[in-house]
Amino acid sequence: MAILALTALFFLPSSALAQGGMSAAETNVLQAEKMFQEAKRHVSSGQYRHAEGLLGGILSMAFPGDDSARQLKAGAHVSLAEVQLLQNKLPEAESTAGGGLYLTGSDANPTYLRAELLEMLARIADAQGSGDRASEFRTRAAACRGRSR
Image (cartoon, rainbow, N blue to C red; front, side, top):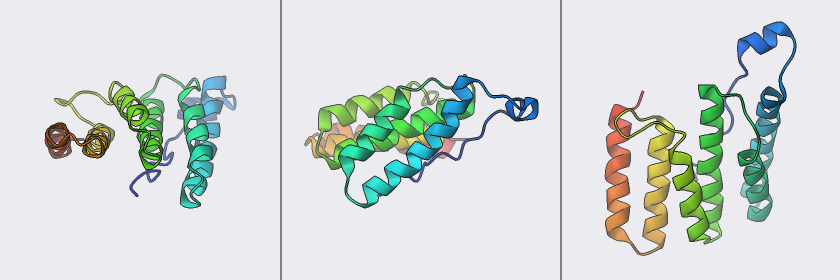
């Protein structure tokens, strides 16, 4: 399971740490990192509903407008989509993964997380019996991986 490997390797802006104070959005980043770790423990013990609740909670939090925060939120989309896929909640998983794409640039200027989201959409399409769509998503993911920064 590649999921939850994306666990919060994100950092607060150094300006917030240097000033000694954090905004509520920056505090949410720290809380989200803890929630990722807890969700990972729930997934490893098969408690998918608990993990789903934690990851959904991350998506509802406000974050700073920086790139690290967007990556954190995109990682939560990938992780939540995988947990939903594990529960055979295919429409929800597809919606969650698709919702994360807007956070990850474009196919022309891709990120690693965009490729992961496209691969997740391919796995969901496979589970739905849509091999053509799965192949299309995998082709896009491969192209993103070849160009990602």
